[in-house]
Image (cartoon, rainbow, N blue to C red; front, side, top):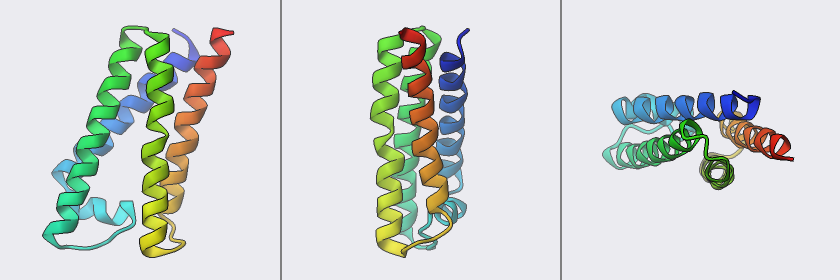
Length: 122
């Protein structure tokens, strides 16, 4: 198994864990997301983001298990938009907060996995 595919599988499993955790414990997830709030609307938003993460993680993991390189590459590239949007939304709502690093690390991690796949293809 290649480094890019391994990184894709590990990253997908991590995103599935984040999504499952946020779906189960939205209150705790509001703090790590960067929008600490304890109202029903915020919890609903966090659960929607969790569902998005579960879908993204599942689709990319499926592509990695199937060893479908074009699907992995397209999925990873598309998935960079989610943590980037999270970063921008959290910054807009709360300013420069430590949680921005979590979202930024998500963008960088997905791009590194994508770059590893691309490098292996050439």
